[in-house]
Length: 124
Image (cartoon, rainbow, N blue to C red; front, side, top):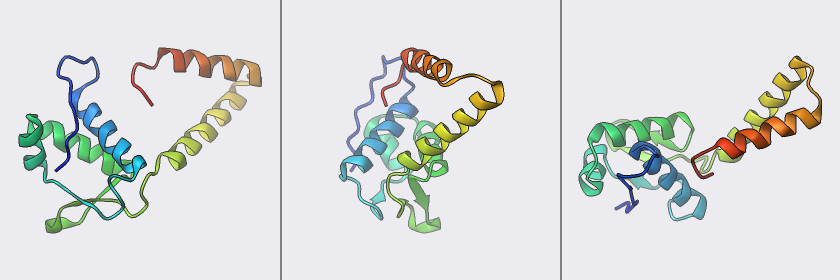
């Protein structure tokens, strides 16, 4: 069973804490590709969360390519494993394209990036 701590007093929403916890376990290898994860209701009961909270985390993880749903068989860690590097690379490429369209130089791009990182409230 997934034992992911969820702090109900945190400013980070519970679904996001759960999403980040699953991603951390995929990155560490604790959850390998093909690993079956608990049903929404089972995990919600274990973590004392609303089923909709767990469903939202699962939905976002599926959209990000971390989970795959196999119909009645349930949800599994995707065979692609941790897609964060690919997603981060695409986001960086898109950011550079926007900076270029705006006519900003590299120094300005880096300043905006540092400002955005300084404002981020959720850990990477």
